[in-house]
Image (cartoon, rainbow, N blue to C red):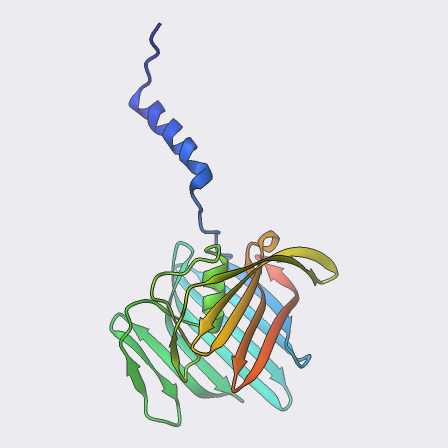
Length: 225
């Protein structure tokens, strides 16, 4: 006896067979309020907001003699971030900034003449890069660049540092670790799959010093971590 399958049934079976090998990007949250602590014990807040096809990442260090704010904004395409601007402010005043277009990136310190660089791939600031990397399972688009507003760096291939565990808000969780070379420096990120792959640790170098932000708690779409 011959069994006949309709084209629709065949397509369904083919789709199911392909599912195990397809790596799908995770869904970005609509809103996340994350609390970190830096290498010097200072509190750092990071708020991620997605509204419509727009996103905004607002990272702040606010203590009496140390006030810094980093704001990244742009559009969302699925789980891909398309940055449009980045501003680094100190004590409420812009210190450095970057604006991204299809023709390249305009960047530089506010106190200096602006610079322009033609690029052949996306440009992220350090925080937007963390969200992009985490929600795409350690993958980045080809020819990715990183900026801190003062400089623009082409990035090398993402390296997996494997999995380990981290204690966050009293609970031990599994994390995935990655590193990326930025010129002569290295930026490292860690993500927690059970928290939807939000950044839980960011380590970077600035002016010869290594800084690390580690997650202590927060909320994701209203649910406490």
